[in-house]
Length: 80
Image (cartoon, rainbow, N blue to C red):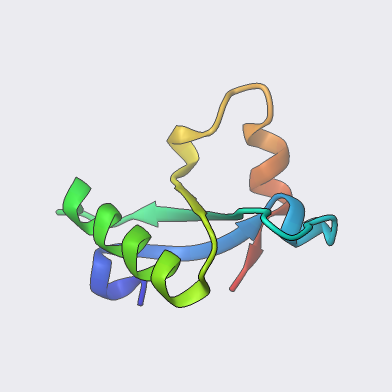
């Protein structure tokens, strides 16, 4: 799916990764963008993931992460 939306290296992080998620928890996904990626690609991937998973999805790129926890997320994030 990631390649179809001009993204690469999908990785999971956050409460689902740590096993602390509960009913209603969102799914935190980190992706790298490929050349030519647009907001339509990210929006399309976001909509498809939410539809498939049935939960809210936070779809982020490394640049979207706060500098306070970016390094930690980049080390911990697990490829899916």
